[in-house]
Length: 288
Image (cartoon, rainbow, N blue to C red; front, top):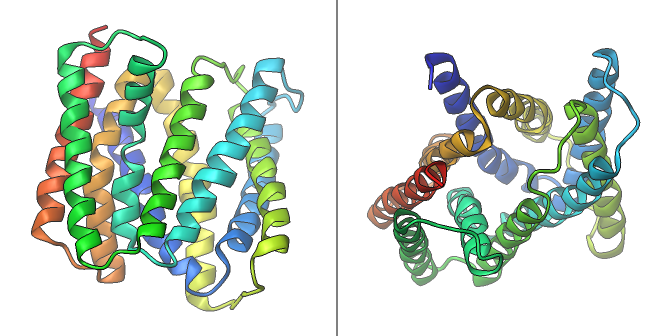
């Protein structure tokens, strides 16, 4: 792996992990579902416009349409919808740690459900990773973390892992920005409808909310997505996914720096174990 790929991977992990702390800022001033619907609407329009300007086709293949619908609902509506809602009651660092289990869940489901081969290093990594998360969650729940919020984050990670496993190998056909923009459009429509039905109206257009929303639209929403696909093209999906092992660490540190969330000894021990587990799983999959 060359230095450029290393820097791209570190940049992706850092920006992706920052989404949880900024989401916590957003939900203090506005309804989570409404905020996400606004974010996806704006991000989707920008992404499609950028794709069209770069000559990407606005027409979808069957595989692209399937990816748009599944990921638009599972990733944007269910995964992020549940995470944003949960962060009304739990800390951003805990949400980031739970979300970081997605690569572990993908590997576990592939191994247990689809009977995909997983070397012993990968099995050990699964045990380590899930053990680290269990350690953190047990300590947080004893410390008063909201169990409903924790359950929402767990369901969210499982939904995204299932979608990822189902659509693995579905090619974008090169229309990365257009496909991502359409996915955001699907999420925006679903979340706007749900917000109108179940969420009390709450929208305080404070400077903090506007800054966090702008950051989410431009950085995790568009920049990190483009960076991820560029990294995958450069080194391949399996090697690129190795950088996910940094997400728990970055998520905890950013939440501490931006929001003043406390860093507990059990968090650091658990994060170290989770990182080791994710790294072991990804390394083992490179050898398959």
